[in-house]
Length: 80
Image (cartoon, rainbow, N blue to C red):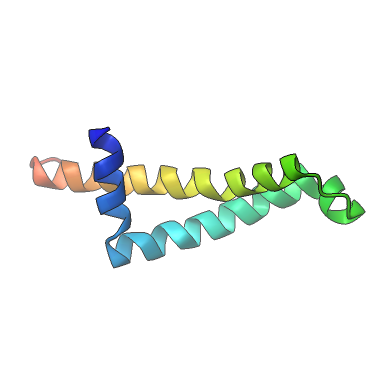
């Protein structure tokens, strides 16, 4: 639970939020096109496809936020 709280506080930093958003937008769009092209081009979009597309954006946002958090921790503890 502490990690989720730390991730939330990290994501509220404007510079981190912008960077995570750009990464999520880029990677999420690429993953959606690669993995859901049939549904996107065919026009048949069941709810599960929308959930998969949402995950394609949420996962890169979370991963980039974890990277930012790790970087802050490293700086705070004298690493890197």
